[in-house]
Picture 1 (spheres, one colour):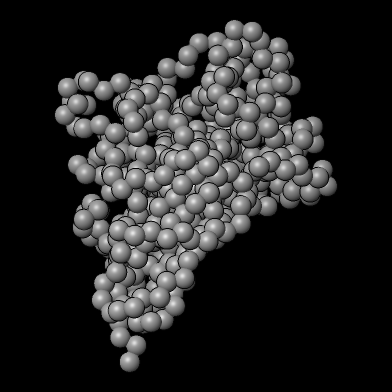
Picture 2 (cartoon, rainbow, N blue to C red):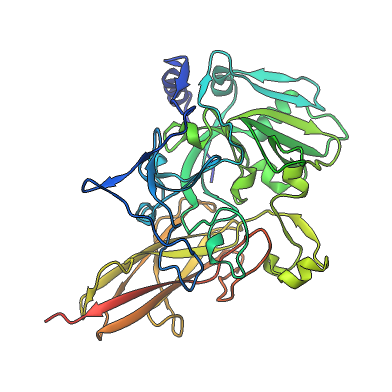
Length: 431
């Protein structure tokens, strides 16, 4: 759901953005601070993160603090990959300081001088543009949309057999209210020429991608006929504040419903192409099997029997956030079970809860609807009638009838995981 925002708000934000002329966060050292608990460094967790051996909801790793960020779980520092802890998903919107971070290249921007920075719209257009932040905020209508940004590899650590890549837990995702300008408005202002096929996006990050792949620039494209083009925005605001540097300051692409691989950070070039974009990040990376649910087998992949296509829309997912199994629950005490759900295909219209691992299901109460691409909170009251172990489970259904399955998925990229989530809890005697 998009909403227009007043020019007054945009001007206020513009003054905030331009007040210092530049943003310098000291990220050039890329040396995070290890988080401390009661004066003691957090001990490392076990290295194996497979589903049977991993009792952790999130990734395995130490907590670190980067500029503008709360303690997040570190997967790697070059490129920076930071996962959001579980407790920040109790509400519909993820705080900017807790929002996960995923860069693909190691040389990321540590400062942007807004006096010099321009967003360039070029390629097969009638009138190439070089827009300042002031131009974006004053010459184009401001729109807002609540949208989930989810890494394509979210939950990759659950895959069996294991696959390479960042071993994310469930926290490589977040939801925010993004404000900016419509991509279509920028393209219309530039005048897309006949014969155009795709729009390519490039940010300020550079660095060492896979050797010999021409991947030092991170380039992603959307087809001009893709319906997502109509809802894509170039965002300069996130939850009412300028974008954090690690989340793409000064502007980033927001492609509602699609995985974050398309959400280019520190966006600086928009190019209209006449030919199909075949660069590494489109033709090799972030590709899935052209099969139902993107599911295949290692044998079929190794024998070359799998057609691979670019990843696209996020499947329906839901999570139990609380209780988290960290403490016993008293017998006969009412417990509020809470979580979130979302789908790239449309609004979540039903969430079902089970206290017996998925044998029997009951409808949960849905929270406020912030739009078809937003997190939807849910909750239900559960009264455990006996002591012992319980397996809580949750599944969601979206408005197109897509429902979570209880079957896992496997593909060589470790993408599209949306199996029904479970949480073990222990109920103790109340006396």
